[in-house]
Length: 298
Image (cartoon, rainbow, N blue to C red):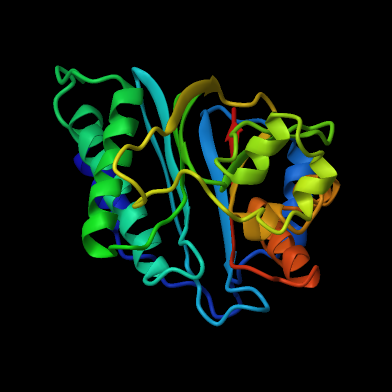
């Protein structure tokens, strides 16, 4: 172990004058991947994120959090990822304060719960279920937003990946999608919006919902009301697919076909996220745009 750390922190040897180094381009990386094939001995998460104020807003009221880790050793490995998007309610005072407070509060609580389990002695045992932890995070976010940004509100959509399981906590109309390798794009969250409720009741069609004048009206949001009922559920991580979190500044202006092409044709998740943001801005960029893409390798 001592030899390992000496090697890790050793001063690099002087290189010959005729040797130059430079970062690999995306084309070079893609060429290596195509040549060697997708062989991964270590199961791990790969994630990218993108964000823009949009073309018609002066202030960015979206906030996002993306944390990806892998803890590996002789006893196996544990991919761990926490991804959160919050969209501060436009037209309300301190929307950006609400969204930022929500992700920091929920993210801090979840990481605090898992830190002893992941990094302390292996005898540590969690005394709460993952869904209970996610619920506690939502409740803490509700309390802090009501205190720090009274009268404001925000959506809050979080995905906690532990191994091959994903636990979702969802309030509002930011969404989680699964993007399949065959191009299918499937939402796995349900919007807490007026038009979505009218659509579920059969009073309007999906086409009418897309252009309804009250399509941005939420009946459930962080910071609004006394009683909050988030949707919390656990699903398997998509096999050979992608998990995508986004605000309505993305899904509200580009089609699922556009989403599929941007994700599946990009050489990397970071480029895919940038392509999605660019597509939303090209479509007018009427709102703030946030997106996170996550893939399981191995």
